[in-house]
Length: 76
Image 1 (cartoon, rainbow, N blue to C red):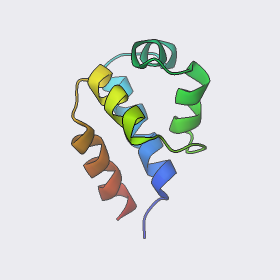
Image 2: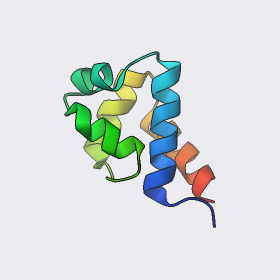
Image 3: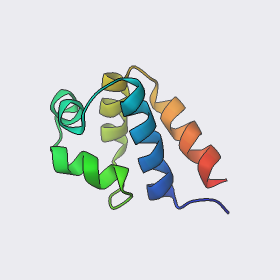
Image 4: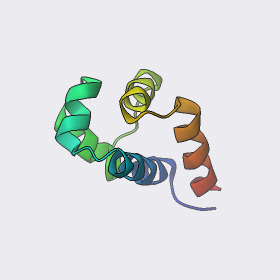
């Protein structure tokens, strides 16, 4: 088995945020979540709700399915 789901999601989120050239603060503002929450997600300390995944995906310009699929691929 690969990484834990929270760790894998965090890696995927950080990757997509980097591609979108957004800071944690910018992503948080656009997705209407706290900046510290983005940090916690990226470090695998929290798991997002389905609603949060949809909000993040919209801001990042990807589909929620893409985020989940990439996370799943890392988890194995």
